Image (cartoon, rainbow, N blue to C red; front, top):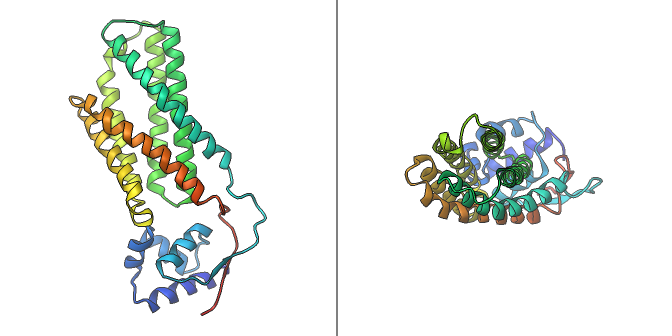
Amino acid sequence: MKQPELGKKISELRKAKGLTQEELVEKCNLNVRTIQRIEAGEVTPRSYTVKALFEALDFAGIEEGPQNESKFQNSTLVYLGIAAGIIYFFLSIFEIGYEIEFLEGKEAISRTAFSLIKVFTYFGYVLFMFAWVRLAGFFSNSFLKIAAWAMIGANLIWGLVDILALQTDFFNLGDYYMVKISSFGFFYVLLGMSFTSFKNRYSFIPLIVGVLTIVAGVFLFSGIAAFLGLIPLTLGEIGQIGLMIYFITKIGGDSSPDSQIKVSEF
């Protein structure tokens, strides 16, 4: 079914259930403006969005149309992001440990070796966030997309600053360390809030991941209690990797934004 018939069908189903657009928003994790545009036939929603709307309206009369495209466009990027997230997670343990030693004036490894560890750590996290950008687009979560892009920008900037500090005599890691930690704390709070916006669609799983990430961000942002933030941050990042794997398996059967959807009549 194409627009505007699809929008009319959704509007009819919503009114038949006695729901307002605002109430439907709460059930399917979309914003009111999106619902309005879909019902008015102004936009063609992604197949996953249509499914979410029909599920929220308890309408089971949908069937998948023939698929001519791959199961999940750019799925390689998401799988690469999962791998990069795992590599980042383990590398970050060494990166944090060595950074603390450098701040204390103990250079356990050469600056070149430490620079390489930082490059791979930052690059791994950037790829991980790119995968979230891709998934955010598929799930129509603009908040997550913004937060992920913000994290990408922060990692690129601070990664460059760290390399300059290690390879030049312009400044030292300790000169800006607390500013870096606090800024990452702010972006972790944004990222965590974006995960909690999934709560209406996927129950408590993204909510737990989001809360852990927010708590970690608050500790990091405070500066004083930054070290305590490592515990919820570790749990939150493990949760993010697990959540990404969950999402990719959940949507593995259909990914094309323009996938055809057949809607059966009452």
